[in-house]
Image (tube, rainbow, N blue to C red; front, side):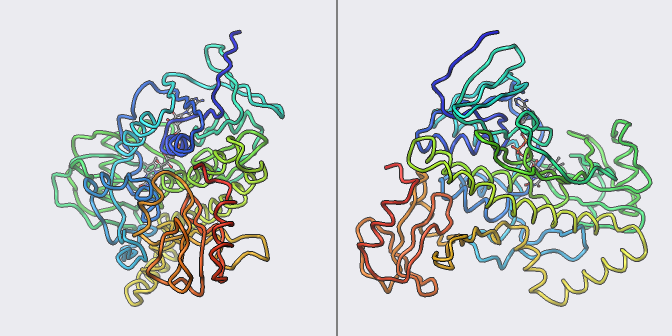
Length: 469
Ligand SMILES: Cc1cc2nc3c(=O)[nH]c(=O)nc-3n(C[C@H](O)[C@H](O)[C@H](O)COP(=O)(O)OP(=O)(O)OC[C@H]3O[C@@H](n4cnc5c(N)ncnc54)[C@H](O)[C@@H]3O)c2cc1C
């Protein structure tokens, strides 16, 4: 057996959106990264298409939002649980008051190029089969028998995560009870409304940025996961749900998925972490998996970089699970609620769907709140420290300051009531009674004070662990 001892500090397994984003974040802070991916080239088809507001903010903070914004389609209203009345993203407190329909594989290409540009090593066509760890490091086993060592390993290797299993991290949750279909096709008939769910089936139809349509749905009369999903089956199910012939032709991609819903019991086991689908799985009904995975990586990236480069104590790494596992739980709960609505084939569930749609129609705040709960803007990481200012952990949403985060460093903010301080970003808007705040590299308030003492603010900023100046 060959043993290869890399100088690299971190091995990331899986070059999906989560692994690619993490590699970029680690490289920004100067950490040596090897990304290991079992497939030999970019994904030919797109799984996700919906990029949400907080993800767009995060992309903007790293200077990467322009292409998805220019080439994607901006969708201000989108379905929740395939209800006919749509959630309303147009009032979100963000510069991005929409969902951007941008293909996942195009985003992955963008991130891949960025990771390479930043100096990440990407080993494609290489499969990880297992790992062992001790207090000093991790030994990663590859399919050809080679072993690599690293200080830290992150499993961003999807729902079936080899890393998660090898690290002994449990993945409790619920098994699949029904299956849905997805197909990228041409519609020769007029497209149906974006979301339909009746007693005979559920169907969502969305124009793809590259042309054609994605049709996805659930058919209670066709639950045969053991059989290949075909154009004929998709057409029969979609036409039944729509109540007419949609003229579905020219499939580019056809697949099926289950509704298994699980979350890793721990996001960290010693020197091993899990992120993205490796940490949480759920059906794609809510259209958030890519977004949540990217935010996992965004939360872990600066912390792991700070510890790997000796700028922070190891205990910082425990906050990754503490902050992201509750977000995983919220996503699972949100998706389960949507799944229940989508699969509401009984008369009782149809009545509930009609009732909820009525609430959305009559109360704009309901439509806005449903969008908020999916957008990622609702995420906050409150500090367990009772002495911390109550705003600690809140999202920093001042878009004018986003370019200051481009190199992944923290930012010191001075609010209008406080005296100037060297190197601070002078906010034009007030935030409650704050004088100064240190914003973490991931765009959340890491420290805040009402004390207008510039020396204390500068000291807090300089003490912040992730500053890799
Ligand atoms: C039909 C469908 C529609 C969706 N729509 C949306 C949407 O609109 N919005 C949204 O946010 N999300 C959506 N999702 C979910 C989204 O696609 C996933 O959540 C996302 O791909 C997760 O990213 P990841 O990087 O965590 O994992 P993955 O994308 O699964 O990437 C894992 C990578 O690890 C590699 N790998 C696995 N095992 C190994 C190994 N042992 N060694 C080396 N490499 C390995 C894999 O080849 C893969 O490249 C959708 C999913 C589906 C199926």
